[in-house]
Image (cartoon, rainbow, N blue to C red; front, side, top):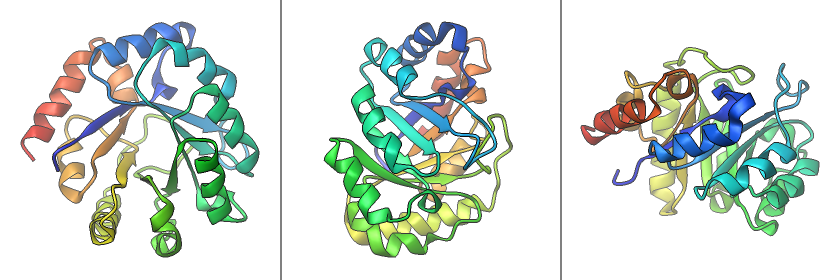
Length: 221
């Protein structure tokens, strides 16, 4: 894998200094800003909406990767696209018509992703792989930051990597949940190329040293 991307999750950032936080983490080497949206309905937590995305957009030039943990999902997509999202992903359980939701994201000028919880089967990919720009494998159950990596996710990552390679398409394979310096190489070996990390980065005093350490581990894969 020639290109690896580090995507810090602002769920773990200091929200009192959010503009400064995103600028600092990009200056430290982040490739993407990961934006977790939770509705206290699909997942048991409530986080942030389009206004916050719009507020941070002028502070960074890197892509903003919006992960929608909301149900129903379609209503929020145009709002986040207008707010400056570059990638919008959602859970198949949150859409009545997955194909239609993917088309809605593309119609808004954004890349489209599908997200799989630890217990969500991959059979959805058989029908929509040709419409995806990103597949996100959750290695924790969504809802809260700071959880431990579920090792069973490695098998799912490897399976998805095989499916992407067989398709011949350029699809990002992102992993979110419990990613840290100590395990990022294992996740890369399984086939991931994009790594969401929250508390592993924002929970440390020196963002650059953490991101550099992650890249050192990835360089050895």
